[in-house]
Image (tube, rainbow, N blue to C red; front, side):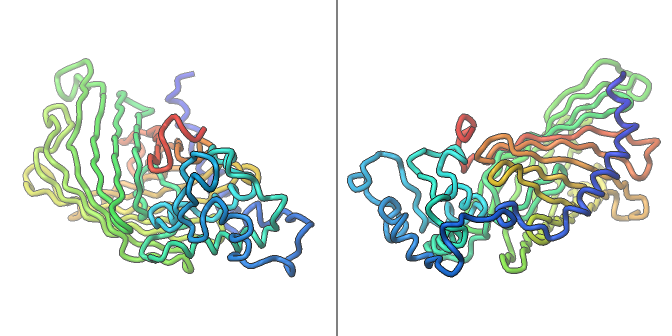
Length: 390
């Protein structure tokens, strides 16, 4: 069977994914909250987080959370500094809970971090996590709970240290493969800078351009910045303002450039829904400096998703659906609309390497625009090298 024929059954996938998401978006607690905790300690007997930390953690991590000296602990593993907000705020409580329950190896860290799941109750583990959170005294840093899974098309509001390689391929008509290499660097508590390098390979249409064969090249490189304007753990919301300058570095004759500088301001918003559901929004415009070469364009993107955990402390599966609209601002009625069902999965035990695969289904102009297979590989390099965390 021709692989391009898969486009025929992807509408059914969209409907199925929507049903899964609508069921999953109900406020279902995390797995660790639904399973019974250890019977050796009751809620009434649970100690305070400070008391648990002093008796169980301070010997290695220090009373101030900065880590005890190697001469005191007797091993040469570098201990984390819980007062370093850049480190302490990035991960959600669920990751901290997994490591305390099962020890360092559950997230591919050193086995010298022991498991406390049999020694502490769930209430005590939650209390000590909240105590550890107090060592970071700067509340300007957004918490990891607001770092919702990244969709294929829609950019998220949370600032990151990531490398992302995305790609897409047409499933109908002439073959065209296009993607981006995105390099992101977090700056301080709320900022991020990035570089975007687009690339592509496509089959030339002899009837339209008089040439056959293949064209390949690097497109218009972009540099951008993002800043978190607002975040709230209580309301599970985060809002960022961002912008890119797209430079005319691509080859216009082969369709990989627009021969004009384009400024792209946009806003990105994320909203948690209950324990594990989320909605993300992105809206922006593309403003060229040479109107003869490109027009003012606008776009809007909506993501609906939910994260499922495999087992109590396993990896994540995040099915999502994106609704994407884009077109010229002077004719918004003619915007192109696409629906993108997709699934993000964690590949490494640490969760710092992830993959996403989906399909872009034209909602408007389906007879003129092809179905596309989309995907990416993501590496959060702050959490470890590509050879770590497995």
